[in-house]
Length: 420
Image (cartoon, rainbow, N blue to C red; front, side, top):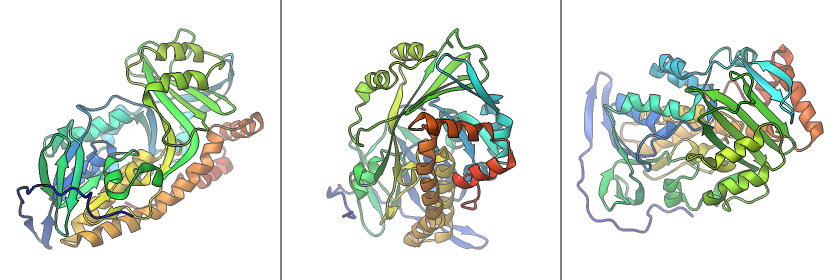
């Protein structure tokens, strides 16, 4: 059962008296808020909290901004949040104009392609493609001059009472806040401290994923503007060009290992084993992955929790609402969750518990719908056999057809949902 304390009694810390800010419609309670995690959810929340008069501090475990990572489809509530934040011009600059999706066979011959304009029509043009790290840099540029961001900083433990949260960081320093927010991703440390071990909340979808970036594209790649995908039963490899004459890769494959068995040191060996014998340029990609410094490798999972807050500790983004990488809406929903949480706190005055409850009530039903859709999508993203692969390809070919488009939007929860 979760408890209000991590059982570590911290030494006294300086208590910063909460400040009331006068506004035309009355008083607003301005809080000291620690956000653990400087990713998409954390930076969005920091920006919005600062604009609403609170005093956020971001603690990020890495020493600097992360690399580019992998490409995302960005649409839905996150697009709406970006519009309200005035980010659309910045997102246009990092957007990749992908002309088409090319699906190839094991010899590299193109089986069919999909005009990417047809894909964007599914979202009425309110859609971007960009690298995850590029979005984080855009968000960081909006907060760096106004919000304290403590890199190489991790929450080690905390203790809370009805009014404050006392935090001990892993470097031994301590501080006190009105609220602690865990925005530290699917493997959230704050969640583990407050609610318990990760396996209690993880739903493993039966896949592993990997991504890395190559400085020089393989010579066998003819059209360096397209997004290429080779899919075989139970495994899929995709490659696509990014700025600087580089190539990004994305792998997804079926996995039987249970959550918790993943060892990052063995990622390359697991990748080689999963894609052994795959054709086209995959052997070259695997060979070149040996020299890549920033290999990403993880299980495809969802996070499901009965509640997202405990006293003055609350979770946001993938820490509590991960819909899975395959579902493709994690960043969008992380921004939506952060925006809704900030708005709830702004309207709460000093009723923090009520604000956290409203935040959860507003967005959690939509998260649960998208998680259900994500589980349905997974079996079509990487089909089990060639028969299901043929059906998937048929639907992909029909993306531009009105009836198929409507089916895809409904089946995979691509539209509607939470209102910003």
